[in-house]
Image: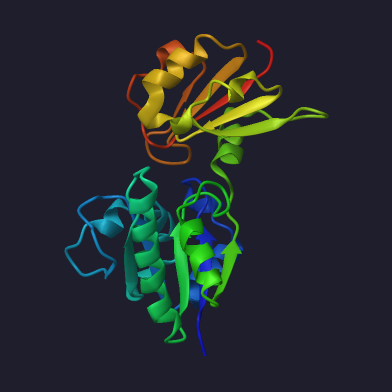
Length: 243
């Protein structure tokens, strides 16, 4: 009998924002999967003492204080480099899914840890779709999205009445999206901050940004000119209509 893969959202950074369902799922699983963006990891592997991947994995570190027994479970590390070449990514994701399926064939219950919610720009989805396509069971355990946590940190709402919400991946160009009405949410803006700031200078709306929401080093900005040219990967911008 094949196992089950659970794409488990760990929330945006604060361990207290882990859901009860996520905690129960992680505890009940036989092993854990973590995505690794470090290009030094070229092939899927089981973590061994001395490897840096768990210390570098934010999702794993969020879970650790709430589910300390996760230390006793084997961890499959999957390469998930931040590349845009489709053929390269296809090979990497195919290999990752194949590695997961080996353990599903053994009947393992597997928790794939992912920041925020697995359905929103998550690396988990690449594995999820392949595992389902190949006839295995895969389920999504939702997590609190980063933009909801950021709105809470800012003490604001995201939308009221007929207002629209638009979620934009900041690394793929935002000019057209900023022209839409309602609230604009720019995710993963950190590495593109210089170009994002230049674009925002030409747009209207009330700017707010949360860097490292719920993590050590959380910072809030209300003026784009105060934002450094280089910020954390976990930088989220909210643009609301009005001033």
